[in-house]
Image (tube, rainbow, N blue to C red):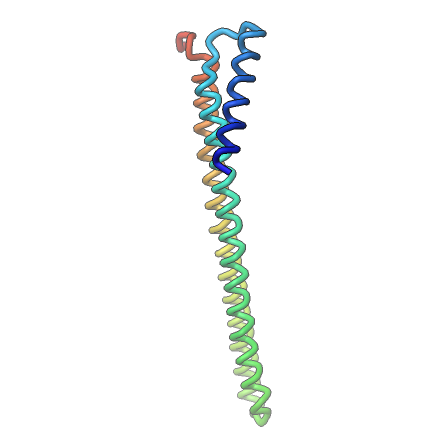
Length: 142
């Protein structure tokens, strides 16, 4: 896979160099552009990896919650001779558990999404700076 990426990168670099030469674009740093592109691919790969890991963690936690809930339900059904007070307590605990589980899953989702967003945001910030450098490296800063 790495050899394919390197071959594609080399071909793209050659095409960009020809394009810059053909259109007489002064001061374009092809190496900087290629490095930027490589980092973009890496950032998107990292974001995809974080997304998959976050989804897996959330799915795993949902499964754990389902198992725990099933065990509680099985226990409750096994002992159907609960008083109305015990039934009320059981219902209250089940509601609180469901609410806490929902909150936990929501927090996991927010955390996962934030990690992915931060990877992409960081790369975009770096990319804008690299593009500015690539296109205006020969010009003086104002």
